[in-house]
Amino acid sequence: MSLKLFNSLTREKEEFKPLEEGKVKFYSCGQTIYDDLHVGNARAYIFWDTLRRYLEFKGHNVRHVQNITDVGHLTDDGDQGEDKVEKRANKLGIEPMELVEDQIERYFEDTKAVNVERQDIVPRATGHIHEMIEYVKKIIENGYGYEIDGNVYFDVEKFAEDYPYGEMANKDLEQLKEEAQARVEHDDRKRNQYDFALWINADESHLMKWSSPWSEGYPGWHLECSVMSQKYLGDEFDIHAGGKDHIFPHHPNERAQCFAATGKGQANYWLHNEFITVEGEKMSKSKGNFYTVRNLIEEGYSGDAIRMYVISSHYRSETDFSKDGLEQAEKELSAIRSTVQKIRKSDGNDLDLNESPEDIRDGFESYMDNDLHTARAKQFLMEKVRLLSSALSGGDSVKDEYADVLVELFGVLGVNMESDVSKTESEMADTLVELRERFRENEDWETSDYIRDRLSELGFEIEDREDGAVWYR
Ligand code: AMP
Ligand code: ZN
Image (cartoon, rainbow, N blue to C red):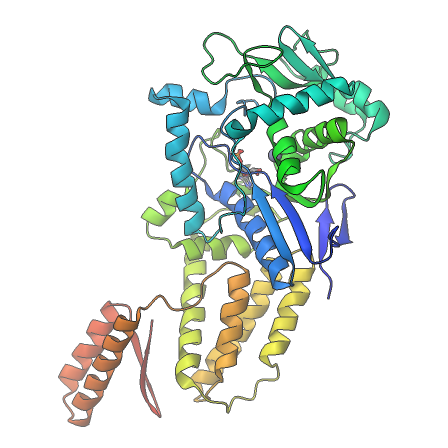
């Protein structure tokens, strides 16, 4: 079975073929580190993590690089406005790097909470200023960049004579030119308003700046991803991913810089996730309509439930955030986990389910092969959980392989289905269940009910089956 992915470059689902058989080189645009992760950001990282897990499930060896932006991302996402990191650091009265240190730690805690595995390489922009300066020199040497007043700009018109530009956004040059003209703040130093900054001359008040052949300054936002992706994955690699907002200008500009410096256009497959919205509006820090992962966890939602909620929709469909959705995800989680535990305890083989665990694996794969359709894959698995659960309630015993396949496939979606009960807790629960059985044999209903109720308060439910009582959490 072959994986198809929707490529924003061609706007088609294409069969995925890595440049080198069995090896996938994958770059995704990461977080600008100035505030906590919200569910919208988490959606992006959850999907790229799911894609990596799925590629590995299909036998590929994946190198995943996801950057951290700690300089150069301005508040208007273009060449104007304040640096997002500096702005927040100023507000808090601390050094930008103090803020970054603190936020990076929180970022790793939050992504870990939703089971996003740390990527193989997590390069930081400030650690690659030297490479960025060398890269800008190459772009100028090749005739696609020009310097004015210590700023260096990318010459879009010149570039477009030699390479494609704007095809990801499905816009021609004229259209892009008009749109840039219509923007409020003009920069008269640019040859054309759609030119963008590669290097920016820092003013006096700017804290994060480095010396360069052009000025004491800092890199334009798009530069870091061109430089770091090619440094760690080579001039050409397989997949480049990011949020929908990167379809223009971030990704076309990254790609243009790569062509301009190396003659190679970075990745073959460009993937973009849709937004999580709140009452129809994009969840974002600037709008203030966001829910951070950290706050949701403090409110009592589990990281697994946030993950489950996010993968319950396809990454290319817009999803409106709701806490009801999270509650639903919590319910599904406990239904699946208890089914898994019941299967492990039933440990038999008299269930006559039409599908073998292998069939379930194939079914899952057919949904995921369709542009990583996690929503349908999850629905498919939930049907199996319902079937297995009703078989168990009907007294059937089910072989362990069904529990194994559920744990494995939900694991590919990044949701942990193994019970979080420790060995000691498990043995204590076993002992209490045995004790309860003895009280029941002696018809001491009061004590046996007391044990059941206390266990229930601790999250352990007892089910009385023909072959004896079992507990599950
Ligand atoms: P930012 O912190 O704005 O640089 O965003 C980091 C990543 O999260 C980018 O890939 C964005 O495209 C993505 N992102 C931001 N907001 C949302 C949202 N509401 N829904 C989905 N992805 C988002
Ligand atoms: Zn990027």
